[in-house]
Amino acid sequence: METPSQQPPVLTFEGKRYDLNGLPDEVKEMVRGMQVADAQLRMHEDTLKVLAVGRQAMAMQLNERLKGIAPLSEAG
Image (cartoon, rainbow, N blue to C red; front, side, top):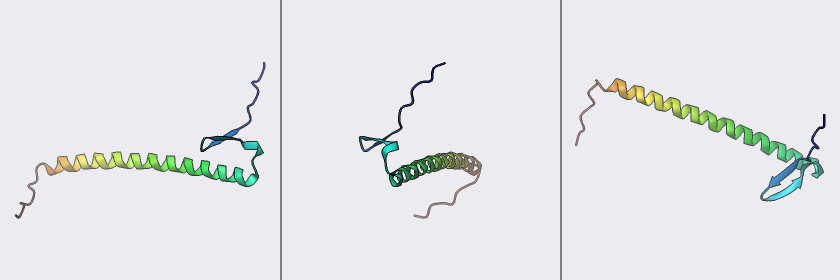
């Protein structure tokens, strides 16, 4: 069974491509840090979406429960 030839990893940044293996270790660390930051951002964005859906469900429940309760009259 033949294995496909591995392509060297490429970093694409601001429209330019770089051979990731040929970059200095300091730059590789920066790239890894950005990847971690991206993953954390995605995770927190998903958490915000879940919280927003939960809040919307609570608002709907509150609205339903307030239907039988008379609000205070507007002073004006």
